[in-house]
Length: 251
Ligand code: ADP
Ligand code: MG
Image (cartoon, rainbow, N blue to C red):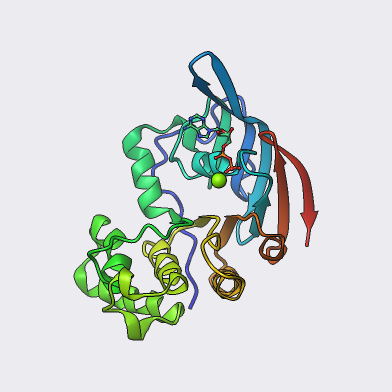
């Protein structure tokens, strides 16, 4: 099975905002990105001039001390938050220039999210959780069913499809979240500390699934972790400190 990279259809946002010219081959390109939070009198520079590039099909991990800006960077790339300055291109589109509706659409159709605390809907079964983004995307029922079953099978949870999240282990819940992240065939999967709540063995199983998706579906994956053993399972490791990328290691 191979997921085709979907082109982001909404081209009403210009590819080149005049200042930055993204490489058309890259999945993510970040230019001079800053994010400043104003906390009363105090300015927090969560991101302080980040530049980076991730190609289609790459599996990249991001490590760095707590507070170094990892989540903020992921949130900018995932159009969950807006930059103070600079640009973020996802598949050639400047995410920062999008309005709310365009950002919502991008998140629904082109980016899969995996979070530390799984963020499953507690009253829905595993199957329904995976199906939900396809309901929002107005996918017909028959094809929703086919895809939800396929993705649950991919993460090895077809037998538990009727379980509620509370009836699943942490590792199983995260597998459901991975299946859900794939629902609308995203070009990019973003994972923020996906193994943070799991023991080492389960954490490795989760990353193994991400590695398989990366290889088999040519899925581009950007993963934050604080665990060096997990971080080095990617193809490339970026290190952050004080809102900057300070190092890059090919693995
Ligand atoms: P990490 O994920 O690497 O632990 P974050 O990106 O969450 O770091 O945070 C980077 C910095 O930005 C921290 O100093 C944090 O306190 C600050 N920060 C993050 N989000 C907010 C916010 N919504 N309001 C104010 N400060 C924030
Ligand atoms: Mg974080």
